[in-house]
Length: 499
Ligand code: ACO
Ligand code: ZN
Image (tube, rainbow, N blue to C red; front, top):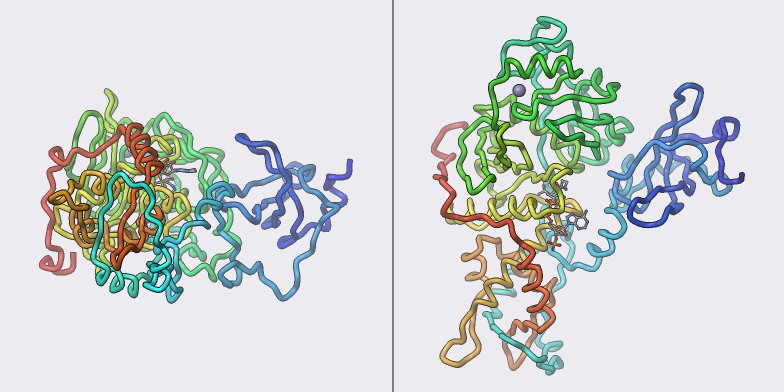
């Protein structure tokens, strides 16, 4: 057996080594991508290796046994290079999306992907456009003002602002092994210290990313009827990281160290829905608005849970500046959390979403786009345009791109001819109708490759392929927000003192 690292040969394997590692793939065939060893441990005199597959998203990192390492191709770490990343930051490593996702992402000239000061693919210059004389078969075409687009193009770079998260509140007095009394706080009554470890997890800058926060620390979370496998590090108290399962109350999100503790908690916990106001209900779907200042413990516990599935985020001690919109699905047992997004009460950068998450058991069923649609409905009520905080994750980008494309195509396809002429619409108008910020409208039009230049005008050309693809996608999009079911009055936070 050549592809083996038995206990003798694995002695040589240290952190930073690179070698092909067998990746067991449920959807495709097993493969041997290059991986980096991030940690080595011994369990029952058997060595285990924590590996990061170089060209894959960090959420696929895992502990593997020695028989999955291809020792023949072992590379030792170069002394000076501290796991450089693609963006040149030391001490971290590439957070590349899963390969199939990455391929798509790389082909997208989306403004939201562009780091600050990077030129953005622009609309065709008039010189190029004069050659673009082909006018493909169209079902409907619309034109928009060129001047505005150039104005927009010049401001298409985005700031790499990170997400915000908070660790739990400093500890309170220990009361008993399991039972606490104060349901509004994640106290230490469960035998769990509440102060987080002060590690590199509390900063957003990836250059401070340390070995601890690079590795998943929670094995499994039980939340109601679901068992969740975290993707990333989350700063739950260290004592809990050794547990095979961390138990969460699915309604107040309090974390407990055992099933017994959870059961005891449930006899006292009266919540059957998230705290805050229910501002939307249609069928079994509800949204609750939670003020990060008024419901601190809940908000903090929500962030700790969310961090398990969100990578590049700042851990923020203070939830006060945020509102949390939690989406639930109702059954006879209560309102079960499906996902959420957070939103700054005041954003100078027009952010209408800070972090967004669909819990893994509910993913890829349209809930992500439902959350996004809801965030834009809130912006519509506020009379503002909005954009998600950057950078977006790989899955965040896919979801937003899909939402923006469908939203814009819906509008373009509804346009009626103007006195027999081609219908006209401006970027501003699309942005006002949808509340999607202008930059995102432009990047989506570019991504969809709809923009042509013809006889001195920009023309949006909807090919049959685009139209048919859109119609097919919309037939599958069953989950939609019904604005009539939204009961939301925006507050002017600037007039409320310091939150
Ligand atoms: N692979 C490929 N495509 C995917 C995947 C995946 N794993 N997941 C979602 N998509 C695509 C879907 O195909 C769909 O596109 P389509 O309708 O055009 O086919 C689109 O993304 C949205 O799918 P939904 O089912 O509506 O979204 P979902 O409920 O899965 O939630 C979300 C998307 C919220 C991004 C989820 O993946 C998630 O929680 N990820 C972890 C946290 C995260 O990355 N959040 C975004 C960070 S950026 C920010 O917070 C501003
Ligand atoms: Zn509870």
